Length: 243
Image 1 (cartoon, helix red, strand yellow):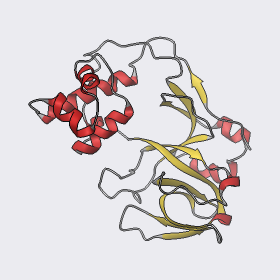
Image 2: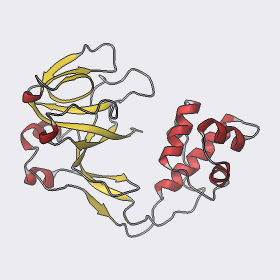
Image 3: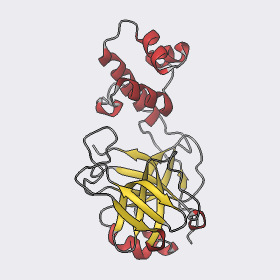
């Protein structure tokens, strides 16, 4: 098998720091709610410290991803829907280890993936993408560019065409164990005949290796596959929405 394909990169020059963009969009989203006392109301609703929330709203602290997720879930919105005006704030140097450089299986690379996965030379030749991180990740990661509408049900849970998925491989030695369906909602299943499938797993029979796969789009029927017919399985760790 290939060695770890993650590289942590340091940039030269100036760029917009992702956490600062996230903070700007968070504040725009808060403004859009029109709350009389946003600090008190939001801190109560998402169970977050008032003092830190005050710093975020007053641009003295940037919100973490977990705070943004709690806010989005409670108020049923996405901060990515708010436009970032990059002329409104000064660009900052990007911190070292702010990103990891990961191979990406884009539309053009999908054809060779079935035969190439596991080949170090193939991995080295793949295009790469940068992903913002707040810690060092362990494991073997790859990104997939989404094609099709099988996971699009017009809700916030949808995975839509041209989204990019950050995925971690489940090593084959662990396939005999039950998949952690309570922890991970979405999986990328690489099937020898069906190709690259992005699905949820409804059932996993460890004795027979049978997986029952579900699409979010109700137009697609559930699908049964067997571990013996798979090339790789990945947890979907994060999603970068298409613009």
